[in-house]
Length: 434
Image (cartoon, rainbow, N blue to C red; front, top):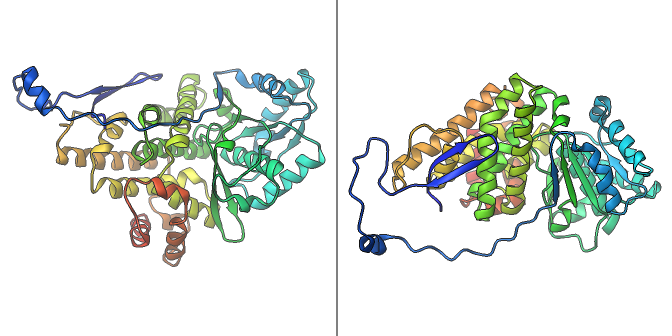
């Protein structure tokens, strides 16, 4: 683990500096050890494990929407399917993109039958539309629900069956159509991830589909699209990005490549999310939040996630509520649970969020204070954004906890949580979050 002295937030970069042992606020300055002494006390550096980093081609910047047409052409499109939703259609973005596609000589078919937390039957309907219109490349313009629906349609187009057949890891055997993603929210990271989250309407839960084939071919991130988000969606997706960053950083599957992106995302959300709520038209803050969502997506698609997401998927499937809002309620409790046996990994997270002062690297008490500060800061941010203080306020009852906890244990995200959790632990966490 890299022990971080400070995290410098400059909007476009986060620099983690190693601490020198013994340096703390108010601590006495001790003489430097001799080279020989340092050689005998320095811990051995562990041999780094192999790290695979999945990533699509990415184009980032204001005004990049038109590039989706060129990307589709390069991927062989003649009859692309544009997946979106009614809210985006009302905002005018699909019409604008359709015009760019027409200029590139493409005959686009638009399908907007997606609702928040995409349902299994919606993906089935989208697949039927794809086949009836003889489509090839799939383009998604929207938030995480639209992008997940597009991935589901692509999966069925290449492999057949029903979307529920593919719950789990690497269940698809055949290639899927090329995918171009254009995110319209600043949080889900679905445009760069190998995840597809779908609501199983029979069981009232969300299933997780995970596989390398689901990483899109192209992600086009245009911060201008974020300006038409309603405030509640801006808040929810921003909290989702923060949860992605924190859970990816402490994940069992983290590595140095994911660590950088996770801390970058955490710092950017901490610095800019509230400002986008107060100044929604400010391009600089929107661009930073677009970057935060992207960086968080790059982190979690490679490091995976943890208990907050595993639990949130079940609540979202039960109540069909915004995923990021549920994360905002659960995350402080999961931070405390994960930090209890070893809080040190949460020190850089707290510093990225703006923890004042410094922490002695080997101080268990200082690390525990930093982890608690991070949990409180997440809750403070959630309060500022109007997130309910507990699950009971959004409709979860005591009678739901047993079922929600049992289903959480089957969620793929729980496998990389840094602390083992059984059903009793999950039930305790749900009750703490009530």
